[in-house]
Image (cartoon, rainbow, N blue to C red; front, side, top):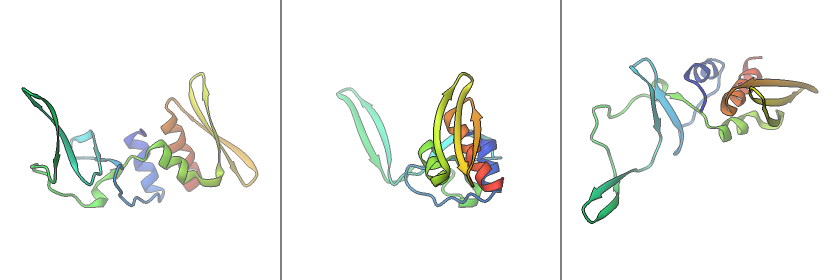
Length: 132
């Protein structure tokens, strides 16, 4: 998962989010930067009973934070989503001694972006594409 800092840079550079089921996000600047939320069409809980575990399907969660505007949420795209956003410029991901490197081809030129985590390398590559 990419860092909150990189997610902010991507949003500021113009990467837009259309929320869909399975997307990860945080609510920054509310003391919850470390709490990752997932967009879901249904909340599922595991309940412990003396007879065993039961998976409970709930329509809503009783929680003080009922809703927030999409602009208040900061999208944390997955590796697959980042690869998709890189489009045809993406050449490959390689594992390096210090982490991972994403190789892009942009206007016939090879561009490499590196990071300790693969998702962060993808994110840095996307930031290069959208912000230069």
